[in-house]
Length: 425
Image 1 (cartoon, helix red, strand yellow):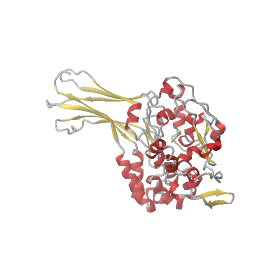
Image 2 (tube, rainbow, N blue to C red):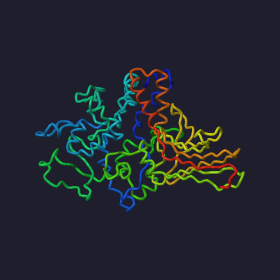
Image 3 (tube, rainbow, N blue to C red):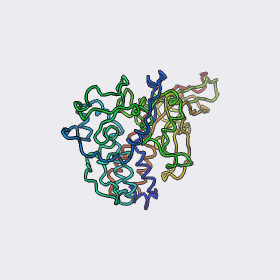
Image 4 (cartoon, rainbow, N blue to C red):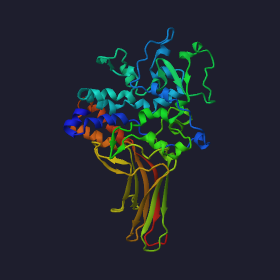
């Protein structure tokens, strides 16, 4: 919410506009795909097609071809799902379906009053169809959109966002690589599909997952730089595309930082406890390695990963003064003016948390190691600041979004190692 942020929480308008711009795109890690493992050639990229396809806001669809059924004319995901049930089911549970969720809607409720230009720019990625915007920019300025569908806007990045332009359907090659229609287009539902390998290339994702070189940056580094991180990674050199990990087997899942199994598949965690002579210090190392992540882990400023080592007693209580932690992430101030730390792991890199403790007494204890992921760490603080300043018309939605961020953390690694003071280890 903008006015509250500006007048009370003192978070500038550009902060909220940026947060809306990247809120759902918290991609994190991915397992190596069979395609990449086989050393496949990268898909051919048609850059002219990309420029046309991702002209935003996406122009209105216009008039549907004569004779088309209501189902063929519809841009609602449920209509697509009538013939593509698996894709619809995957999309429904994925992050794209929530790209206009309460955190964004709550901010827009006030932003549309205080900074309408920024509010109109946000749907370019979050609800990119012209039919999802209440207003359009015409030759004479802002005009009411006669084709606006409020229900469609709430659905976020819908099927048509990627697959429909001027009522023409677009998609990837068939699994065998073929592109040509198998029957005359006039005989096919919605006139068939125009197929291009560009749908299988990382460049297809860059429109919403990469800031321009002169885009918003903190400490000289773009806040959203995932595509460029991928380009410099071993994954890119091996031919592994974003889709190979985040849309495995062409599933419309967009698995990322909110998915525990996805994160576990992308990083390796190892706990090493050194042999210890009697009365010697306990020493251990917790190592987190990026083994199958095609960009920095994590890629944005929003998530935080915490490695933790501590001692716990027989009652499972943490021994006072025994905790050591290391945060992995890019920490910035809430107003996005300053970078506090950047401890993210580059592709193939690692982070170590070293531990050393003198054990007193003869009470048995355990060394506990854990790695916890906080996918929405930044947003928790951001939404709290908004509410503290007064969230206005978006308060209920911001509170809902805050509650979601508090439910999102999960543990990807936890292990206890018994330690008996004085014994030889």
